[in-house]
Amino acid sequence: MALLFFEGFETVSNTTGAGTATDLVTYCESIGFAGELTGASGARLAVAQDTVHTALKWGAASGANANYLRVPLKTPVAINSTLFIGARVRLTDQAQVSEIFQVWDSDGSLVLRLRHDGNQQFTIYRGNTSIATTGNVVSLGGWYYIELKWKLASGTNGAYDLLIDSVSAASNSATNTLDSFAGNMALVHFGAPNGGAADSNQAYIDDIYICDDSGALNNTFLGAQVIRGYVPDAEGAVNDWTPSTGTNNSALVDDLPLSTTDYVESSTVGHDDLYSFQPVGATGVKGVRISGILGLSGLNTIRSFHLQAVSNAVTADSAVMTLSSVDTAKPQGGWHVFQADPNTSALWTAANINLAEFGLELD
View (cartoon, rainbow, N blue to C red):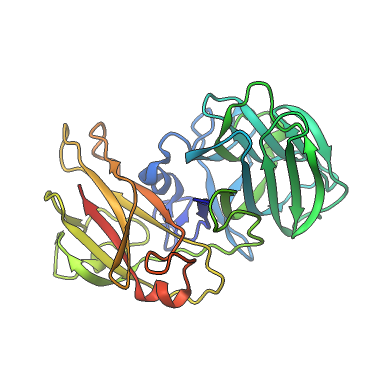
C-alpha cells in the first residue's frame, strides 16, 4: 500500500465546540494518536483559520513547550525503500527557524529533518547532519506546497528530492541518507517535537499526505493536494446498531463538534453499520480515509472492530482494531486508508465514492 496517511483538519478545531469542528486533541486521540499531541509541558496544538485554510498551527510557545503533531505509520517504511511527504505550509515569521517535519524510526532514532532556516531557505538533515540547503525559495506569509522524497539507504544508494510547488529546490540521486542509528521510517512529526527556542516560530500546515513507493498506486510524488472532511448524511444498506434516540442512525453520528450525547450502540459480534456521506465533487481522488470514533460502556471490557468500505456490493475491510478498557471516559477508535475502490481495484472516482457506503463492524 502506497498511501499511508492524509489529513486536512477540516473537521477539527483548537477548542471543543468552536465553530463546527471537534477539538484536535480529542479527535486525534480518538483515532489512535493518544499521547502524541502535546509538547513536553502538555501544551495543546491549535487549529487556526487564516484567510485561506483551516490548518494546524504551531508556535507561540518556546523551548520544550513548542507544539507538534506526530503520526505513527501503521507499517514502517524499510531501508532501501522510499517515503514521500507532502504538506501545504505557511511561515508567518521569516526571520526565525521553524521545524517543518521530522521522521523517526521505530526505536526513536532521528532519520531526517526539514527545517526552514530563515532568509527564505530550507535545510535538509540526515539525522542531525546537514546535507543540503536550498536557495531563497519562499516568502513571508505565502502558502507553499512542500514535498520531500527520501530513499533510505547507505553509500550512494540513497536519494532525496525537495519540491516547492512542484519545482525541485534540492536533490541528490546517489547519496547516503541512512544515519548509523536509523533502522526504518516509522513516525512523522509535523511541527517542533523536541522544542528549542528557535523552533517556536509560528507556522501553519495543511493538506498533509504520506506515502511510500510500494504497490502500483500513489507510489511517487502526489503533487499539491487538497484534503476534504465529510460526515455521514444518510443511512446505508445495513444498520444493525441501535440508535440512542429516534430511528435514523446517521443523524446520531454526524455531529460536529463530536458529541457523546447521542450515538449508536451494539454488543453483538458481526453487527454492521453503514452510511453514505456528503457528496464529493473532487477530481483526481487519491484515497478515502475513514475514522471510527467509539467508546466502551464499562471497565474491564475489551471489544474490537474494523472499518469497511462497500462499493457496488464489494466490501473492503480494515485490520481489526481493539478498544482499551483503561479509560472508558475517552472516545477511542481508529482510522484506515482505503486507497482503491474495492469494486474496481483502481483509484476512487468521485462518482463511485458518492455511490459507496462506509462504516464499521463489531468483532
